[in-house]
Image 1 (tube, rainbow, N blue to C red):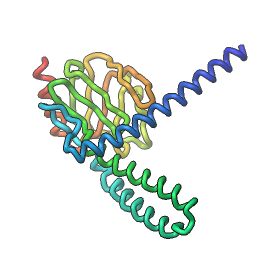
Image 2: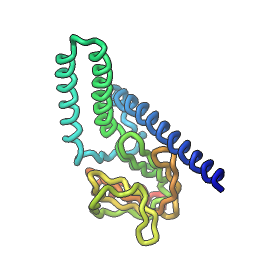
Image 3: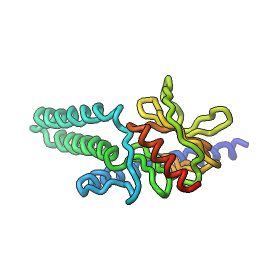
Image 4: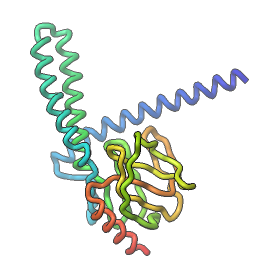
Length: 218
């Protein structure tokens, strides 16, 4: 029994470590991809589809972090420039952190939610990209919800498993699915969901576009 239990724990730990490593790799790749997409003016929105941003509640905070990181990088470099063994690691970490924050801002600009003939794509930063084929969406409505604390990515609500893509602990669009859909979550996890709640800066436009796409299929 103890051997089996130990083996199970080791397998679970290994899976978590691999999941964390995979997520870190995905974040790093998408960060640079988003910067390049912004420079090339090629947002991740297919032809014939519309993008809907979702970063309004956090946009100012990210910009402030970028400014503070840039100032901090210069100040620290001035303070430690006489000690190369200290200066170089601080410069590398500082530049990487600044690029990461710029990449996050670029991600919000070039990787919005998408509504188009192929369906709805729900995104959250660099590591969530959920495809919902148009035929799977049974209904979409505006409904603002606030959560007292950060909600779990998938929660149970009245017998439904709901994917929650909140921004600042709020959502303002509900999508009900025609049938359960298996979605890929960060860390190589998967979950079957019956509904999706998300935040869109333009909820009215998102709902209208999604309803139009759904009606075209039906």
